[in-house]
Image (cartoon, rainbow, N blue to C red; front, top):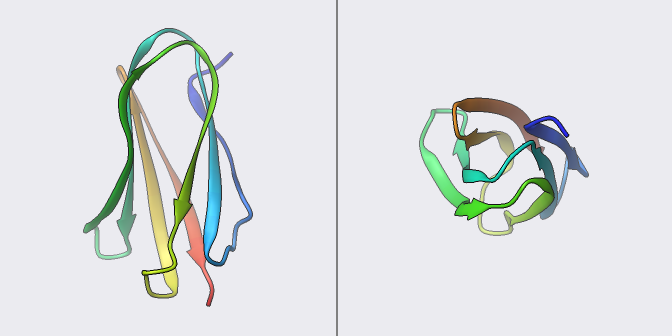
Length: 87
């Protein structure tokens, strides 16, 4: 298992998307969503998690259409993925 964001499905999405990710070892994980201006929109995960595959759901029904970025920090690993919300 590689520590990484595996997929965001569906993308583009309306109003919710599932972010799937893998962890190679037990670690502290945070998954945050930012808007195109770099402002924090929501924090989906901030927890210590075990190695393996996990997922988090973002319901963006209260957010405007546009580009968003999901950022995962797991130990020393930082990864970012683009999301497109279409309403």
